[in-house]
Image (cartoon, rainbow, N blue to C red):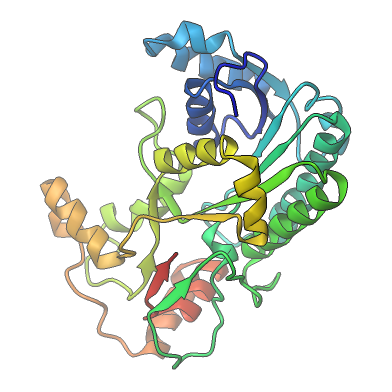
Length: 336
């Protein structure tokens, strides 16, 4: 796409989320005009005003940015929002940060909300690129039969086919949402190209450089609190920096349409930093960078038989964390 085109406008859903904020900044710096959506537009405007005030090019970026109200659970709020846009980047989605998850809180926004966004893009008539933010939970079958030799290689053709509403509603919502988006774009927008960006566990700094997002707290609290000091669980953690995710989204939005269309169903761009980290690797990194936390970091795997370890996880963590641990314990994963 022509970077000099002043009319390049993108509808960015969830512009005030952790990934959404970094994506908005990356799109603006790449020359896009960004129309961001938020369920709290006043808060979003104030937040971006603060960000623009601290950026050397902030005043110029601000002239190409706007915030509009929209809610994934209210389809009528999307009417007219994609007008004049040549691309849609759909990052809006609830993020689960702890406790047992109510299925209706994640599957509804992921599926019906995604449908509302695609239908609005189709009505607008000028959208030629739809980029959907997915997750590695759509790739990994947590309930694969144990004993299959590894490491496992996961790629664009990999899908989580066994997640259930009872065990992992977040994964169900992400799988159904991505598949629905791809199908509807193909049916309603035959001249548009569809691609999904599939990040791992997203970490990295907040744009403001201060308050950490809840997802980072969820990842790091067990370490810095000392909860894992007696030992870690043998789990792979596919980490990725939020800025790399944002840059990949921009790259996909700017990609040659013929090349992207030629990929077909393989237009799923996995974003994971190799090699896949393990919990002990994270502990080693924290120990090296923050010696004050060294005594709280695990140095070994928990010496418990599998049944006892899973019982401990079920008694102390959410149902979703237990389900994930049960399916992923000891498995080595690699990503294409």
